[in-house]
Length: 82
Image 1 (cartoon, rainbow, N blue to C red):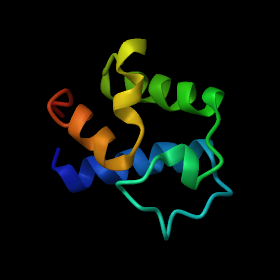
Image 2 (image 1 turned 135 degrees about the horizontal axis):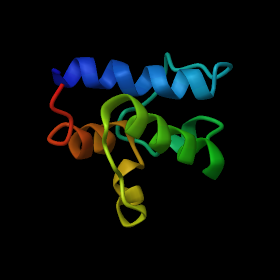
Image 3 (image 1 turned 30 degrees about the vertical axis):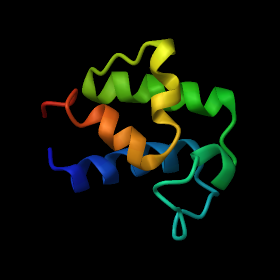
């Protein structure tokens, strides 16, 4: 999976969870929680969906590494082998 494909996959998961949000102006280096209506339950849903779709286990201690779209990509890219 390329980095761009991974980015699209992450955005797809977020859009499934938050279908009413506008992602057109999303800044990949800014915190997702500051840009979209992402609460802690939504965040957990994203983590669970990553595990379900890609088999990626994200320990709670690593949650801060998923704060921005870019940090999500950096964290997930070496862990997703599809």
